[in-house]
Length: 87
Image 1 (cartoon, rainbow, N blue to C red):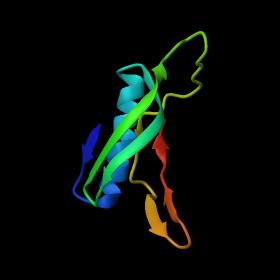
Image 2 (cartoon, rainbow, N blue to C red):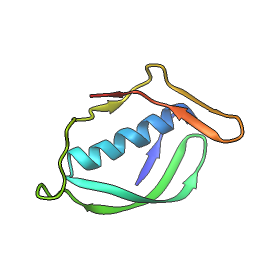
Image 3 (spheres, one colour):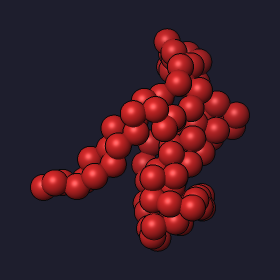
């Protein structure tokens, strides 16, 4: 999976929203990530997981999108991000 954006902030939002597309449109639950390349405006990763099995997977909420509302990304001792999802 390759994700691009105009900024680091947009890259994180796009990555999360693309993972939601993989789940909601493709019926695939991403569970493992191998980040191959990571820059300010591009992320290349291999994702692994499994298909949605309604006998095993129960979803209580439908997460629609990662949003920019109150979005924050930064670094102190560690990188952190605050993201609010639209449900």
